[in-house]
Image 1 (cartoon, rainbow, N blue to C red):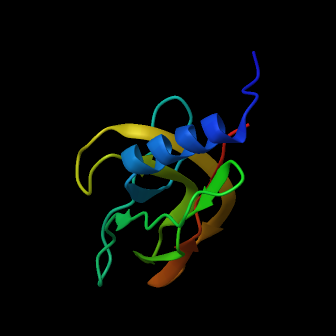
Image 2 (cartoon, rainbow, N blue to C red):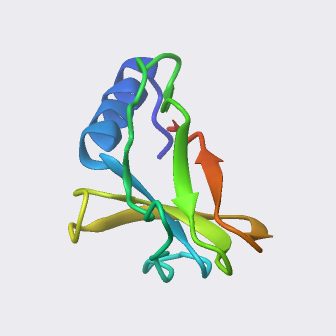
Length: 115
């Protein structure tokens, strides 16, 4: 059954935002399980807080998060976790693969839409 009201879809978006508090980068494509999370670099790679904006019309977007990526790393996916380290993997998506030949940054703007 499809969700009929925007009120209920917005409530589900708010729940998603509460749980999916941190964004991560993967070198392999995530799915039902996470991909291989990046490591290393100087400055070092670390998960970023998902600073979600207001929920409206069954959707929310987080502020862009810039990640430090080590030389030789490839970004192939992003994921959402419940904690800044360890935590529970909650969701993920593939991205257009990007390989870094030197230390660099990769920016993610997470968006969630409840249909």
